[in-house]
Image (cartoon, rainbow, N blue to C red):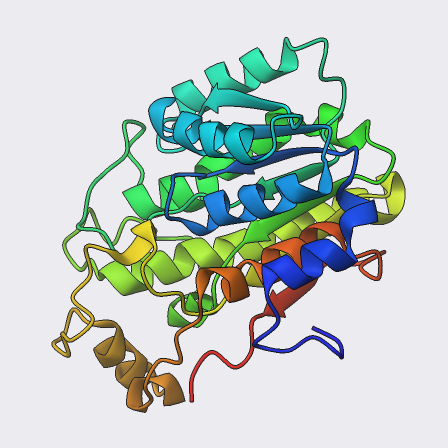
Length: 295
């Protein structure tokens, strides 16, 4: 982030500064389960009077909880729930078809592809893809392409992909993205390739639709955030072959010998807010990190 923003800048501060850019906009955010960064993001930007917040989730109960919290704090802000299971391409198609049928929502000003899973046990999606790659990349890729006309109908269309500095853990394994059917599966490298794919998708969108259609695409790393739903299943004290630190050291990354500098939720979503609304981001694909991630 350019000055005066830094690693301690909060989303709350940025929402106040960028309120005029948020007001009146239609924003769709995936992955808004209470306790996660997506929920924190939409609850913060609700203070700036967006026209509509579209909240998605694998089932409707979790985004409804977030919608209820917004309604209680900001009763004038409209919300709408969309069931979107990113791990199933059939369900993604159904969700996109439903959204495209909403004639009262002709445009989506900002699409925030936020939902993710991280370092899960090996599993295949219903379509036969490794589950992290399916959920974190393929689902968002398909959904975005199916609703792109509503995004491009906006005056200043923008798509934000929440990636991670975990992209350094693996490139996209184009010839073996399911780790040979799970035989040589590493949960962190699987996460890494999905986050690399998020960045490459943002870059491809910029190349195809940036100059031609005025689309701004941004990918970001929010920082290392404690207490979110994304990592509750992970034993962060583990240093064995299946641990993040082990993979970092194996790859020669300095982070394998460092300790995490944890961020608060409010600090983490500052990058979401900046990437979604700051007007200095124009004309190219960018990747923003919530520095410093490690100390």
